[in-house]
Image (cartoon, one colour):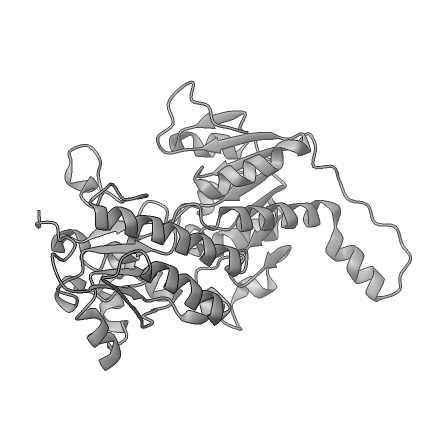
Length: 367
């Protein structure tokens, strides 16, 4: 196990912001947020230099069989990026170059942008003694609101009603009640916890899977919590399935033909986690037979979705281009978390949302 790197004893403390500035929204707001970071300690210097590989490479880097291809496809570092990595002690990042411990010899801590972090781990953090924290929860409210909006639109047939208005057709079209439905939440992290809280007033039964669940476990706003091993049985009892899982080797292609067959006939499938969760050919087949009533997908395996991808023409699919977030709220929350963690990091205190990078080194956990 590599010796953990720390805060520099002397000289400037250099922090890197690696996400594209435009992701924050208004550049004035970003500058204000970075000024607040600089005021935390007079030693702090902030460098804004983007490093972003794209969702396709992120997916490859999360798959054991995709690492070699990801290495071959990784973008070469520019001179400005090399200069930045040569100086930074901590970064705020969605992506990192492979072998980052060599590229960034002083880097000791990475604050990730989301709850998923497999692509960051693949950069060799553990072997270089670099710490990692994730940003679980910063996006939860926006995505949960998106799920509820899409679910109500499907149940109340809003899209069809809008189409009839555009055609000036005065023909009644009726939706169904959501009340009395059983909603299954696959994964019970911050996003689906927020979904559950917003479902409670609708009079539905909410069931959630949690990998660590034990008999008798409970959770706020949920009627039942079951372990991941009971997922197929849970699917058979649900009218709607909402997936919000981060990408990991265990979740890739989790929803295959067998899993879709386990769903209750006529159920609705929603995915706002990662596109790699779904075997899209299996989903399309289930939609064509009508076994799955419809699918609401904010994430796809290939992003941007190719113009000839069969998902475009699959029956009863509602697609959106990874748009369930609200960037202004997301990045305000993210930078607030990062600032709190900078204070803790400088003080030698525990970091919020720290990832145990050696969790698979212990017997019984598995990769």
